[in-house]
Amino acid sequence: MHFKTDIEIAQACPKRHIASIAQTAGIDERYLELYGSFKAKVDPALLKEKAGAPDGRLILVTAITPTPAGEGKTTTSVGLADGLRAIGKRAMVALREPSLGPVFGIKGGATGGGYAQVVPMEDINLHFTGDFHAIGASNNLLAAMLDNHIHHGNALGIDPRQVTWRRCMDMNDRQLRNIVDGLGGRTNGVPREDGFDITVASEVMAVLCLSDGMADLKRRLGNIVVAYTHEGKPVTARDLKAHGAMAALLKDAVKPNLVQTLEGTPAFVHGGPFANIAHGCNSVTATRMALKLADYVVTEAGFAADLGAEKFFDIKCRMANLTPSAVVVVATVRALKYHGGVPKSELNRENLSAVERGLPNLLQHVENIKTVFGLPCVVAVNAFPTDTEAELRLVEEKCAQLGVRAVLSEVWAKGGRGGAALAEEVVRLCETPSDFRFAYDLNMPIDEKLEAICKKVYRADGVRLVGNAEKQIKQLEELGFGNLPICMAKTQYSFSDDPHKLGAPRGFTVSVRSLKACAGAGFIVALTGEMMTMPGLPKVPAAENIDVDENGAIRGLF
Image (cartoon, rainbow, N blue to C red; front, side, top):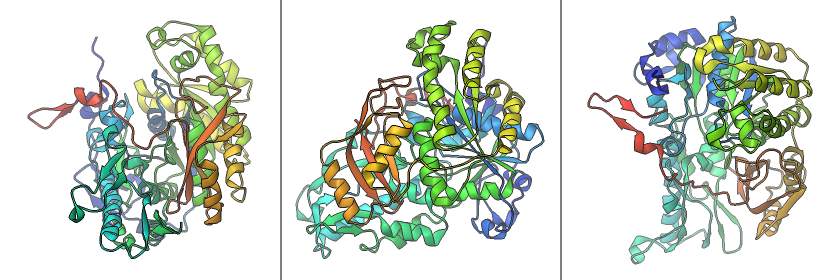
């Protein structure tokens, strides 16, 4: 029996014209900028018109610690939005844009799965509306102006050994992590060590996602620290007079992208930072716009709740003054068995003891949502045909002990109909009193904020500052950056900074080896363990299976 692939399902789905989707969402056509028949950008001026409208309920979808078995966070987000509409609610979904690196690397696509997808999936997974290209161009314009300034006399006194700004591209390319450029004589620039980050880890991406309008965008771009002088003073994009031109390159990219789910639910897909090396949330503008247009807005944060959800709360919600109403933690029985020590090849067999050994991972994420952040929570068990009744019952019983329901989500196979039960529970939770709070206070010293995240969320024994980290903390506080939130760059595969420690490890410390002020974004990035800001492709990248036929139909995305 042949099961349709995700791309086959998406290509077979009849799509509505995007103007019709906009009408469903309550967006007047004068705010639409069409990119063909099925994509549009929405003018942020819509927010001014809707300023007096009440906000809908904000629902965050997060997940357990990811495994090769898969969890289905985006699939659940899309299916939940469809499920809310299936039970008669006015709902939208606000997601991140996929990055080409993972699309051609491990993931092979990032628009949901089965019958819970956003479309047109090929466009969204590839160039979409060009946002990432604009972000890369803006980032690299700043890099070019920085090196050009040094070449033409260096009036600002920049120390070439203390240039912190890196170039970027939207592809996993380990070859570019560390390079030497400016070779070949004086006319070719000043030789120095350099490197590339992936576009989704660029501070320009974070600036776009966190900015509140064009004036705020330019302010944040101007605040970006690109280097330090010989005296140790920071040099900004504003000092280089680069921020205006950078903003010009981003003038269309700041506008949220409107698309649709397979069932015609309006969807914003805008911005896409990685949650393991950046803050991992879609744009503030898209989220705010959705909240003005719908009664229930489903959004997601990257990777597991220790990364994406923590940053969603402590960075995005804090900066944008957002208060979530409920949280969905996605899990699969297969992933729990993997956390319980079962190899990927044996996950299809019933194994109650492995489920029980893996459950502490899920339960720690749930407990964090409830006790650290003070929000009501539901566990969405993303259904697989191999799940047994006994395994599902065990998950349900263990969650009930924490006062949380575990609801079977069948959105992959059934779309919105398969998410109706989850939607009902989410609506109930949205009416539940909550006490939303952050994991730390901004006025705490940097080292104490690091300790708070690591001890409260990861359950580490503490933090170990290695290399220059202690010196960097002192410098950051002296430069006036001490009151910024922390963006932890940590492996997504474990609560710890060791990707091999599955489940809910104890008795570990988190090694912080480097800290950097992202003054434009408005946070401090703390690099832990072996984290890098430019990933590499796997041994067999998904790109090997992606192709296009003579009619322009793409194959191999999944």
